[in-house]
Length: 489
Image (cartoon, rainbow, N blue to C red; front, top):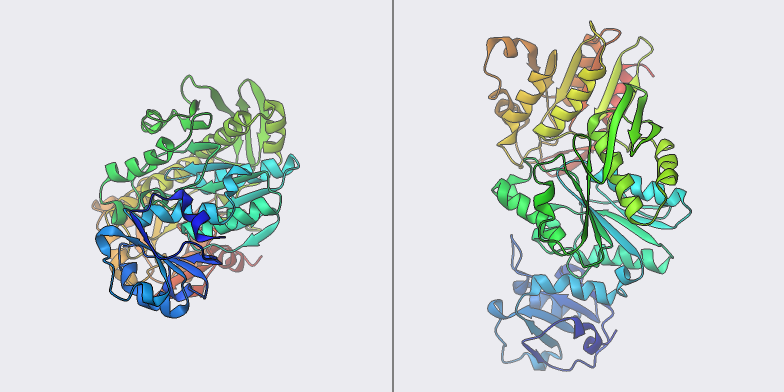
């Protein structure tokens, strides 16, 4: 693409050099620059991309996008044979540039974003599966894995950087996908990774404490989520959870058509549980009964969001319910594994106090006494430390026994993280419920050894992850595998 065509989506302060040059690709990492590339210098939170401009030129960049307050023209700028495009905000330029470079993919497919603290992966993945059942080619961008129809593409982030994101969306459009469903993280809104994208609709799940290591306050975290709905265009839909106190706050300034869903109050889409056990539930959704292979009120809320979004996209309610009845839980989201002796283990990604509360509440609603609930949980290193004692309190409050262990310690000492969690347990009665085992494998094995027939073990925090991150190295570790080994399955 010619640089002159590419920068039509920008409002440059000035351009130094020729725009009659072919741009073969774009990059925000100078190490990825190759001859013919456009390099976008972004200030960043850790390092300033402007200091890598010489490296990008050395690598063969034909053009550089720079930010006015971070860059001044040098005497040899034009001598280098490189065109400089100066803009007021280079971070904000990345998304629109990437979207245009990769063929404006969201003009060719219907993109639906899902945001909130919990439930994003489940809702996005179920929408992907529902619309594939309807016969459409679809794309998925999620925490677990990205998909272009049935092609799996590994992922490292909930929402990729704008270039990776638009490259994937471009492939989806080129390969005939009609729909794409993606998780929209608070980081992606704050860092404008979704800039330039046109969404057909958005879904809000819920909001509880998370990512305060980045956002610093709950209000800033909430406002980042709201920013997604503020950018939805007229004619799009916004499906929001009326059972969450932030549900209507999210959509108060949106131009989109707002629809609500609820298990407790009047809403556009409503549901209630008729029957529930560890095999699934019988639900009533908008007056129709449906059997699903999911468990828990939080999953009813997730299914209702999927139902509402699908109806907003023109699907018949009865057809959506039939599709929902065939689906199974997403990998690492309330997955059950049963031993031959009658012990049930549940592997779940719950890694916030609220998520633990939801999962444990569901377990205790179904658990038949004298069966006991044994919880194995930890907390991630180099993340929000404030939630650690709260997670321990959630676990102790709703469990008969608790084993606190490692999650992904990253660059922290596992015992230090465990100590932060133990600080939240103050009463002698609660302390008697708790033991700590640093080694996660041994913690899970111990829980399985302690469990008696009829007991339920919750193994929380990692869900779909098949690794533990320790000192910057990812070591293979899968909760499912450890449980099956302990159960001799």
